[in-house]
Amino acid sequence: DGRLVIPVAPMNKRRISGIVHDESASGKTVFIEPAEVVEANNRIRELQMEERREITRILIRLADGLRPSIPLIEESVEVVARLDFVRAKARYAVETDACMPSLSDGPELEWYHACHPELLLSLRRQGREIVPLDIVLTPGARLLVISGPNAGGKSVCLKTVGVLQYMLQCGLLPPVHDNSHFGIFSDIFVDIGDDQSIEDDLSTYSSHLRNMKTIVGNGRPGSLVLIDEFGGGTEPQIGGAIAQAILHRFVDLGLWGVVTTHYQNLKHFAEDTDGLVNGSMLYDRHLMQPLFRLSIGNPGSSFAVEIARKTGLPQEIIREAEEIVGSDYVNLDKYLLDIARDRKYWENKRMAIRQKEKKLEETLRRYEEEAETLRSQRREIIGEARQEARKILEGSNAAIERTIRTIREAQADRERTQEARRKLEQERRQMESAKGVGSGGNELLRRAPKAKKPKPEAPPAGAASRPIAVGDAVKLDGEGTPGRVLEVSGKRATVVFGMLKTTVDTARLRHTAADPDRAPARQASFVSTATADDLRDRQLSFKRDIDVRGMRVDEALQAITYFIDDAVQFSAGRVRILHGTGTGALRQAIRRYLDTVAGVASYRDEHVQFGGAGITVVDLA
Image (cartoon, rainbow, N blue to C red):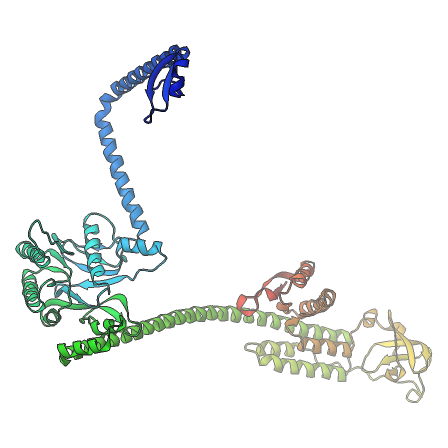
């Protein structure tokens, strides 16, 4: 009671002065409050009572302050409760992968990938996957009669329909795909399980009949009926007949719903009656296990014989049972098995065809995208080629102009002029092979001057037979610039042509009457025929791509230096350097060098389909 006490053995209780408050259930311990702490305990009790009085006073003050706001508080409680309710529904929808289906006011049931929410969560906790349900009922087939093996999923299918429909009509999102369609039913009648009662004198069958009476008496076109094991619980022949009559009454009332049964007469009745449709739960005959998949359109077999064999029932019992029911029943069951097998086969075929069609569509779409990319790249490449062709044409025209200027400045003899004109004609024919180039070449060729016939030189007497000697006036074979021999050493001679001194074979020298000392200074600067021919051959054999893969950095940079120099000299416009990816060291070294070249306007990686980062495209200024 909030008093501080000491547990003491009964024999020692008189040795402590104080108040005995209680003793243990066994009587071996008494609880004594010592006299020394009685006053302290009294003080504690007083303080506790004062605390309670203070708490009461504070609560009264708070209640007095809140009392005027009671209506607002009640409204807030309702709002919070509603928000909590909405949040709880949303969390449950997320947990069960629920979606918002299409809704209609009247009866409608078209569900895809429907799952029983509690079964879904239970299997998920076990690490197993649920088999979803696809079910479609229409005004012409509004009552589904499901048959199939025991433990095949008929009742689960029935309960899934009831739970999801009730969830929707209670404002909860059902776990279905969002292309599903739900309607609103005015009533939902359910007959599942065994309602037998000793107190009410109800057997299993009589309890079912009482439920059927309620459905027939209250059912209307907007009602949903869910009945498990329809017609069971009594003698099969009369039970099947009564069930068929009740099912006929359901059709007349316009009810919607799902019923499960094993009765053959109900399967036949559903096949021949408008408003009814057969359905079956599929079963794997080879593995002897249910597939838990609903198939609408054909009745299902109970697989009683196959299941009996699987359980190990003696063969003589099974054969006797087949003889009792007759060959017609056994054959009918076999026909249903064959239908189920064929349906499964064609469903697999249809699924495989759909997958192939999807793959073909994806492949076609990818090819169309790649074709569009190639067309775009083709337009880009053609544009670049035309631009490069214009640059080549401009470079060729400039080369022709330089050749004309060289001929004029060199005052060439007739043979050299004819050679130059021959090469110009050859280049013109080469350029005419390119579209739109021939006219420019013809125009420049017409502008080339005719060869000026130099006055024949009067060679000194005996020049034809006299050997080359120091001080002789000579010229190179095929050239018009005179020079003076400074030194002769065997078959080599040192000759000065204006400001240029060179050593050549004496066989290439010819005596001339021209005075080298009086020749114009500009004649000392000349380009030999061999040099011009070499330059043109290099230009004709120049390629816009260079491959430096496998080279060391210094080797690659030396090769690229000569390559870029030629490209700038020949007005290449755009070139490509193939260096590969590798570690990237060669690529970086090449680009550092390109940054130092004045003739390089820009550079970039090649398009990914033509080499990507392994090729550098260089645009020249």
